[in-house]
Every structure is written in C-alpha cells, then in structure tokens.
Image (cartoon, rainbow, N blue to C red; front, side):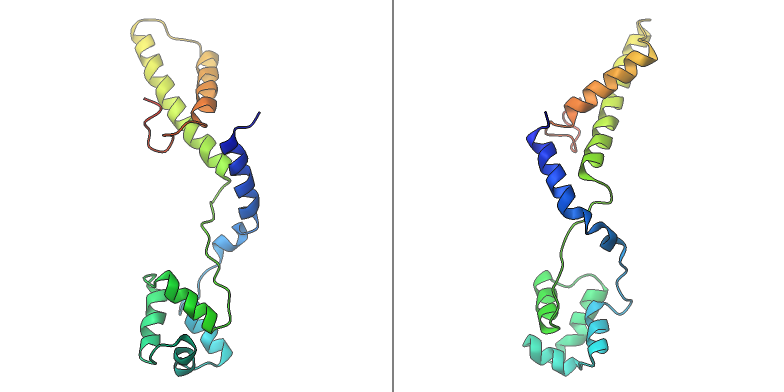
Length: 155
C-alpha cells in the first residue's frame, strides 16, 4: 500500500506532467515583457499607463526581467497590463517519485557501504546479493521518512 506522501507525489506529478515541455521554453533575449510589448506594437508609455507606473519605470522593469531580479508582483502587473496570464510553477526535471527513489538509494548505499566496511574489517563480508537486497530494503524505508534531504535519517 502506498504511503500518503507517495500518493501526494503521484498527484502532484500528474498535475505537473503537462508543464514539463514548458521547462525547456527559452525566454526571449529581450525578456517576455519587451518581446510581447513589441509584438503588440505597444509603446513603453502605453504599458506604463496600463500598469499605473511612470514611463521611466518601464525600462527598469524590462531590465529587471532580463536580469531575473524582477519582483513577482511586478511581473504579474506587467502580465495583466499585456493581457497575459503569468504562469508560475516549479517543474521538476524528473518525476518526484524518481527524485525520492534516487535520493533514498544514495543514502541507503552510503549507509550499507559503511556497515559492510566494518564487517569486512571483521572478516564478515556479506555476499553482493545480500548487500543489494539490504540497500533496496533500506532505500524503500528511507523514502518515506523525514530527513531524506538533510541526511539526518541515514546516519
């Protein structure tokens, strides 16, 4: 039976799967605000009026987007003024479950290697199949515990 966290990961993965292709969408070199404004034939003064800011503020806003220092609320106001929806999401590069599995495998491998190192020193080295099974079992357990990303659980 899947844990509550695993079910939550599955649901969020489903919601985010349609956004994965957008993760590779390159921002125009001038930034979205200026690119859209120019494509619409909208002047800086027009955008300023629609945003409720001074015309002198528009180049700073566009530069802030290019430099990725723009505030999210300013970007939202610019999007609204351009009659656009601002889409804000963190899109994982792989599935959330794959991320958790990889991290728990790393911690389990490290932990089992430490233990087998001590066993080797005592001339009690377990078989490779036993080591692999221990890693898999520990990884499955670690995947559902808190501390997976801080490293506190595997020690």
